[in-house]
Each structure stands twice: as C-alpha cells, then as structure tokens.
Image (cartoon, rainbow, N blue to C red):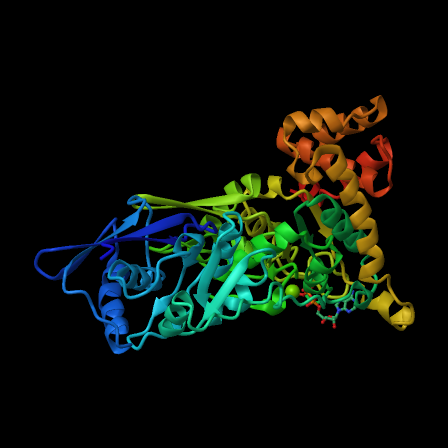
Amino acid sequence: MNHLAVINSRAQTGIHAPPVTVEVHLSSGLPGLSIVGMPETAVRESKDRVRSAIITNQFKFPLNRITISLAPADLPKEGGRYDLAIAIGILAASSQIRTNGLGGMEFLGELSLAGELKPVRGALPAAMAVRDTGRCLVLPAANAAEAALVNDVELLPSDHLLRICAHLNGIEPLQPGAASMARQTDVRYKDLADVHGQYMARRALEIAAAGGHGMLMIGPPGTGKTMLAERMPGILPPMTEQQALESAAITSISQQGFDARLWQQRPIRSPHHTASAVALVGGGSTPRPGEISLAHHGVLFLDELPEFSRQVLEVLREPMESGSICISRAARQTRFPAEFQLLAAMNPCPCGYLGDNRNRCQCSEDFIRRYRQRISGPLLDRIDLHVDVPNITRELLDDNLQTTPECSAAVRNRVICAHAIQMSRQGKCNARMDSSEVKKHCHIDEQSREMLRNAVDRLGLSSRGLHRVLKVARTIADLANDPAITARHVQEAVTLRRLDRSL
Ligand SMILES: Nc1ncnc2c1ncn2[C@@H]1O[C@H](COP(=O)(O)OP(=O)(O)OP(=O)(O)O)[C@@H](O)[C@H]1O
Ligand SMILES: [Mg+2]
C-alpha cells in the first residue's frame, strides 16, 4: 500500500493563487483524521464533506490514522476549495485510484456530501497560475467558463468526484475545456454623440482619458455630468490581454461573482455617497475587493462628491498614488490592485444653482465655502482636472439638437495615439509619472515658466499641484502629437484647474 500521496492545489490571497500542496499520510494507529497547516473552520469542515463524498460513492474510507498537511502552513486557507484535493489524496494514498500522472495535475473544488463538485471563488487567478506551471487543472464545471478565459492552460472541468476518479483510472477520460470559449468580443459602451455642447468638459474628458488623469466636474443639476462620466470607459484605449485578465480576476474573487459577458469591458463603478470606507476600498475578515479594485483599469465615478463622508474620501488618497490597496486584518495582509481613473461630480453649491442665471441661488457665501470644504485639500490636489459643466439649455434649444456631436470612436482614436506616445516614452501614462519622470519628460520653455510662476502666485498651487499641471500639459502636447510642451499647452492645463481659482 502506498501510504503517502501529494496533491497540488491552489490557495487564494488577493488576486493571486499561490500553490498549496496537500499531503495525505496513512499510518497505523487509532482511526482518525487530522488536518494540519493552519486550517480554518471551513477546512476543518471539509473533513466531514470529504468523508461523506468518499463513502457515498462506494469507495472505502481508510480505517487508518490519516494526517493531512496543507503546505505552506503560513498561508491563509479558507473555504472548501481543497475538498477535491483532499479526497483525491485519500483515495490515492489508500490505492483506490491510480497515481501515475497526478504530479502533472492540480485540483480545485468543493465537494457536496454526494460527491458533486461545487464552484469556488477565484478560479480565474488559479488558472493563470497553473498555466505558468504547465500542469493541467481539474476544476468544477461551473468554473470552466471563467478559467477558460486564460489562454494556453489545460483544463479538465468536471461535475463529480466519480468522473474524476474514472478519468484517473483510465476508464473514461474527461473532456478538456475549450480554451477561450467564454470570450465575448462585442464590447458596447454609451456614446459621446449623445452629449450636446459642453465642449470644455468633453475636451477635459478626452485629456483625462488620454493621460489617465482624475477629473472633477462642477455644475448645476441636469447638465450632463453623469452622462459624460458614463461615456468615459468608451473612449479609453482597449484593454490589453493582461489588463482584461486582471480585471476578470478581481470580479472572479468578488462578492458579485464572475460574468463572462464583461470580458475586456472597462468597468465603471459608481458607489453611492453613503458607501462605507470598507465598501470603497475592500475588507472583511476574508478580505474582499472594494469598489476601487472593482474599478481596476476602469473608472471610479463619485457622484455628489461633497456628500461622501470625509473619512471615506481620505482612504482614497493612498491607492490613488500607489495604484493598489493593502488591507491588513489581524495577522494577514492582502493587496488588491486599484488602478482606477477617478471621475467625480459636484454641484457648485448646496442648492446646486450657483452661477446659473435662470435659477437664483439662495446659498450664502459661508454656506458655499463649507460645502466645498467637505472635500479635503489633499484629495482635491490629487484630482488633475477640475472643469465647469454649465447649464446649456438655451444653446440646446437654439441648436434644436440638429448637430450631431463627435462620437466616442473618433475621440478614442486620438486617445489611443496619445496613449501610445506615452507608453513608448515612459512605459506608463502621464498621470502616473513620478517626480523624476516629470523632470525628465516635462521640459518647459521660459514663456511657460513665467506663466506657471504667475499661476503659482495667483492660485496658490502646491508643489504637487504644480507637478499635476505639468503632467496635464504633457498629455495635451501628446494629444497634439507635439514632442515639446509649449505655453499654449500649459495655459490650457492651468485653465483646467478651476477649483484652485475659486477657493
Ligand atoms: N449636454 C447634454 N446633451 C444632451 N442631453 C443632456 C445634456 N445634459 C443633460 N442632458 C439630459 O439631461 C439628463 C440628465 O443629465 P445628467 O444625469 O447627466 O445630469 P447631471 O449633470 O448628472 O445632473 P445631477 O447634478 O442632478 O446629477 C440626461 O439624461 C439628458 O437627457
Ligand atoms: Mg448626475
């Protein structure tokens, strides 16, 4: 009798799926089963599920002392994802299935008491990790579509322990999952052709998309702020394979679950202003990604920005700089990616009608100041573009909605060109340049320098604010395919920091 079996499986931490080996050892002694290697409640419960699954399928549950070790011991392990690996390990160690070829396979899945395979979270990151090892992955059929998004990985989806055993015993081979079968290529976004007027805001949106800049829209109710924000994903460059996989990996481990229809679609998340800090950045005893990670490679839209609690907004500061968020819970730390593009909207004053000549605003100056101060200076500093979205009902009426505004495809083409320039120059978008890169790539002439000197004095720009203006100017130059930043670009960049002027 072969007393020891070693089975490969995968844990899940953040969006990674580190390897776990499940060792099963049978020895003489009082019958019993113990699992070592920091198992949590769910893993301990897996004992009972595995025992039932083995017995109900007419296998023998070994009457030995069974020791199961999940290694490495310091990895957090949750859920029933190791059930299948443990069951296969017990059957292999007690010689009830053939063991040749097991080393080239990985097993993932939760078992029902009857031996059916139930889906697990994070099958996509697991498939990505297995691809790099060259092994094949045996996984629940319900997870197959998700894992099949990964190219070049051999998948053996199944819905029952018995079928997997039949495969291992050479009785009836499992059908390999077709690679990329779940991919949908028909990505649809709302179109900018629906938004009339608002040239300044449209221009700012294009600059934001081209350089990865955050943008705040300020305007009275019903002027198209939400409309503009919803159209942002449609003018961003198409996602690369790697970005699409990362984005899908996050939905794969999230509460909302994976949806193959969203493949390569840039996400837009609009959390309500009553959202808690945990909902926004993620958390929980088993850390789950929050809105900012669900918006990874897409857009995070904060409508009614001043209504968000200040505490909630403050937690955004760190991920906005680093592009990821680290969640610490007791002994474990989990890092989730969060490279989102921030869009925010607000009314100019509490009643919403300041500066609107038809509706008389009733707000006192002090009231307005307090309203705006709800957004902290440091957060505002991190938003590169502030732009007015005024009331344009009159123009709309005169125009009678006759003209067709430029469509998203045209804007997107310019964004793609500007994006390509940035990638070949510094390998990242302009908004993510650090100060040494700003120094290297954002040279300005004497005329621009003088203009900036004035702006610093007039607007009280912080050093960070100044760097942001330079980065925006760089993006404007890139959109014009201009290798050098000129005074015109700097001028436009300064104009697009509206709140620095009015506060
Ligand atoms: N520039 C515009 N072009 C075409 N339609 C517009 C425009 N602005 C507003 N609308 C119309 O008004 C509706 C409301 O626009 P939207 O929701 O974007 O306003 P908002 O600025 O977000 O307002 P609020 O401050 O109340 O959130 C749109 O659904 C659209 O029908
Ligand atoms: Mg709105």
